[in-house]
Length: 214
Image (cartoon, rainbow, N blue to C red; front, side, top):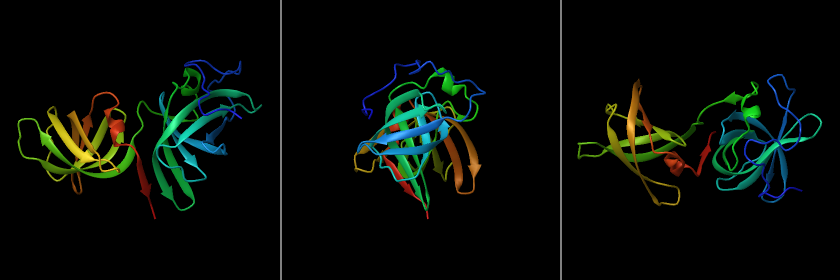
């Protein structure tokens, strides 16, 4: 059985099996830290992360080994990763996984998966924002995060092009303080939805969430 630390060198396939846009179905499995294998489905994928549909609940921070195989059972690509986000629904579960190895160009080119530059993960995190040159804080809700950004919901208009400081807490009650730039905003039934760019990988500080949907 493969170790959770087993990984493929970046941009290399494990075998001589080549993946093209016309390749048949690939099998995706994960190995949990307990050694238990699970067959899963890829919902969305990028070069450094993946969103999976799983038959069982996986908790944030759980290490896994992701393996993709061709119809003959040959391993095409594998990488260790860490679960950082989980949505639990009756009969269906989705998890977000940060991968330790870059997804190969061949897999990214495979058209049967929904490919994105960055994946977004829904959350609902109360926070406060201080806009540049404005000294009073504004209560907001972080409604999703990606590796390099967040979206916030606010009752007051944002300030496109301006910098801000946002403060909140993670699930362990430890403070999260980030700086960023407001990139866009659109009207929302509850106010305004504001898209914000953060320094590289700072969006990952909002990870570790479990969403339960009835």
